[in-house]
Amino acid sequence: MEKEAFLILAETRKARLFGTARLYLGSDSQAVDAVDEAVYKGFLSCHKLRQDAFAATWLTRILINVCNKELRRRKREITLAQAPEPSAETLDHLPLKEAISALSTELRAVIALRYFSGLTLDETAKVLDLPVGTVSTRQRKALALLRLELGEEEQS
Amino acid sequence: MNRMDEWQALTEQLEQAPPALDGLSARVKTRARQQRSRKILGIPLASLGGIAAAFVLLINLSLPFALACSGNPLLAPLARAAALSPSLKAAVESGYGQYVGQTQTVDGLTLHVEYLVVDQRQVNIFLQVKQGGDNVDCLISGTLTGQEGYISLSGNTDGDEYAQVTFDFEEDTPDALDVTFSVEVPPANNSGEPPISIDTPPDSANQPKTNTTDFSFHLTFDPEFKASAQIYTIQQWIPLDGQQIFADRLEVYPTHAQLHVVDDADNTAWLVGLDFYLTDEKGATYHGISNGISASGGTGSPFFTIYRIESSFFSDARPLTLSITGGTWLEKDRQYVQVNLLTAEAFGLPTGVSLSRIEKIGDYTVLEFEETNMDQTSQIFHHHFLDGEVKREFSTSAWRILEETDGTRSITTLYLPHPNETEIFLPLVWSQLLQLDTPIQISLS
Image (cartoon, rainbow over all chains, first blue to last red; front, side, top):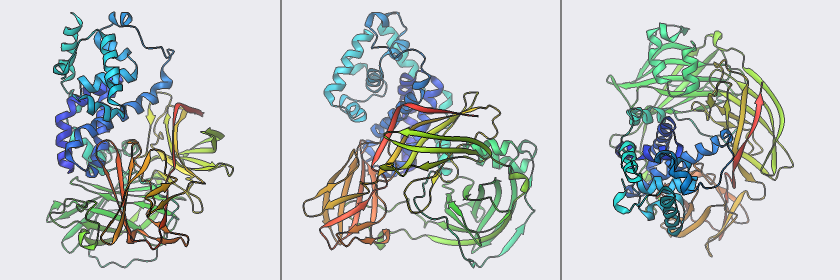
């Protein structure tokens, strides 16, 4: 893919990328940094993309990797013990944004990709390198915990 | 507000890109121009004989001199050019920039050597290339006359104002350099790499023809900018995934920091990549270097002895904390991938890498490898292969590597001139990746 075409794609998708990173990382500034880093990495490698049609999914995957790397780096800064998955009752008392942040990384990833990056189940499975069935299971679980009833039409 | 109302509000909020993402494309392009993350594997630091180049010397405005950036408009462009390298930015803001102002024109192409940022181990040179008054997209490489013990990294303009060429020195930076810059200008209408697909193997007809022009300069440096490094003694063995390395010391220069490590001869693998960063007392972090090479080692072993990251030289916040988050290994008993060309089997591939295709196309045997670890951007194979039991070596001039992605995996395609044997051996750059769940932290004071 040509570099200029890649940047046009990145600019048109930056809001969605930011939304995804924001849910992942829980911080506006870190989400901005993650989008910057992901687009930069994509820019360096976009010439290797075999088909332009893959570009959006590919860029999203780069973003997820950047976010995961940041989460691993921050792991040592977490002073609270790593808690098990919170219950729906616990999450009920939190604003939705905080409730999503309280989910495990695995569930949060699915919510971010399915409902903020606008990816299909298949595309989400490819980005996360998971079977479609696993993604579907995690999606159901996350929505149940958040008390949300969302279908395909609710995707942003 | 019920949950669906919250959902609607959150969706609307996150659909808006924040103002901080304005200028995203411009930032990316400028940063890419300064991207310098090439590792040098086992290549001895080079020395050169004299290089003759015909040139016309037009202007030598002045010897380099140093002034604080904020007070000197001549250095303002340097501040912009260095902005995306945190170390160089801090160095320039602390008065480490030097204005050169030397210009030459050869065959209508004009090279301006504008600025330097120099310390005890590195020289960063900022240049402009113009033709008819307009900036030219080009690649610039530099070589030194009468100098040993250095590695140079090329720069390109890619539509931006300045290109940056960096020289990293094994010993102290000399007080002056005789530099030859080779400027490669791609032909018009060249969009970059030639279109190559698996069905059209590379040959000389596909290679882009570039025009190269040489310029020679004599550059002198203000000795004021060779302040001694800050040295942090570590002297500690670090266990890493069943191996161990000896972290000897951290040397912090104005333009970069160097972590010096030593191998353990009893290790079953060589460390060929190290993921780490520094944190200072105020919480500022210093990550991978963006100017100069990222690692270097001697001959005789793939082990890298020096890793470079951004510098904390101008930070008053000490002590520092070194955090190691992962590494890349080449196992001693897995240095080669053995490929049977008849049975299409490959033995000894790194985890996550598979042989997906072997095919004869024209004069080439084509091997295609897939890798699912999208985080790993280093090349898998060296640019040569060994042919059968005799293990004759074929260099990159005889073959080609094509690296692509389809969005979910990386694909490396090797075009090999038809080997005489049924088995070939592909030397690996790495065989194993390590990612630590909990970083190893060492306090440096």
